[in-house]
Image (cartoon, rainbow, N blue to C red; front, side):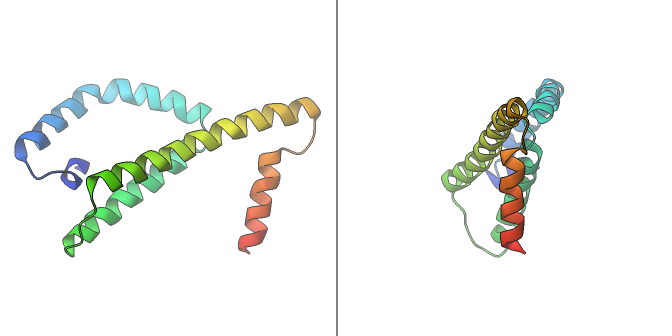
Length: 116
């Protein structure tokens, strides 16, 4: 269904759905391992789905969001999720070696107190 955010051409929609069905099992295996290792990937995917939903909603009202902008936003969100996950892993290992409060926990607590 997300292909409708990109095109209305029925051939592309059909071909992408068939490709998605064929590749879904292997992609699920990759994502299940990645979600275990990358703790913020699941949240990043949720934000991407929210963005796609908002984009589709805007198209109903006649607003057009370019494909290039959509691709940049999606790659940026996923890149931030992966990057922050890798940073959190490195910090957790470093803090474990030093046996002190994880830096990521301190950072998240600071963000939480700032938002409150």
